[in-house]
Length: 234
Image 1 (tube, rainbow, N blue to C red):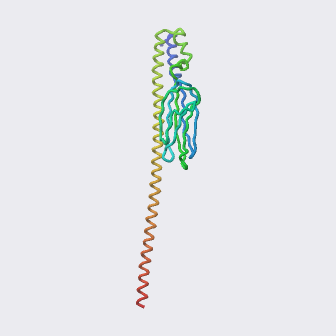
Image 2 (cartoon, rainbow, N blue to C red):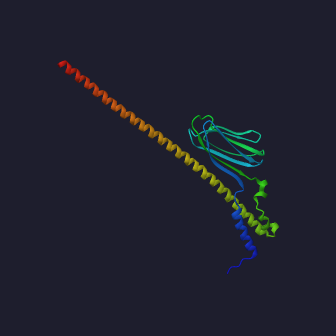
Image 3 (cartoon, rainbow, N blue to C red):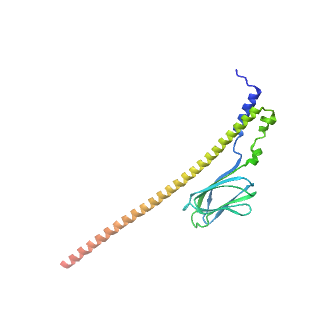
């Protein structure tokens, strides 16, 4: 039977807790909203200064699939302004603490509403390392009586898990982006199919109506000529 020393058990417990709790310490929101025709929809997010903000949006349904976008700082400074765009991706560092404003403006459209998807991700910086570091790590490393070798290994594992976490986060964002692109392409295909079907049916109806009218007119012409000849012979 295999026996484990207390240090080995402590090491395995630390690895297990890192694998469970080594999740993404960040703020992330993704929503799909409907912006009515002639309206503007705005969203607020409180963000501290010296943060890294990732924001992207896509118009996935409605009209020409374009919309106006405005991003403003807490002091009402325009950080990004786009006119009639289908999509946009922004990454920048924040320099102010407060409520940031994200607005989608569909006021130029009089009849068509827009379906917009957006994703907001806010990662912690290096200054928040103490917030990202679980409190139990102090017990498993230097301050808790662990050896230097165990501390180095735990840091290596935590670094590797952080890289995996970031890659998984990017993969999720890419999958969402591809899903929205697929949804938008399917919407375009269905809309084109409806247009083609409508005009095909309309063209067929016009052709059949023209054919019937031509037959009636030709028969009426032959009928009038036959009647005129008969009256002359009499």
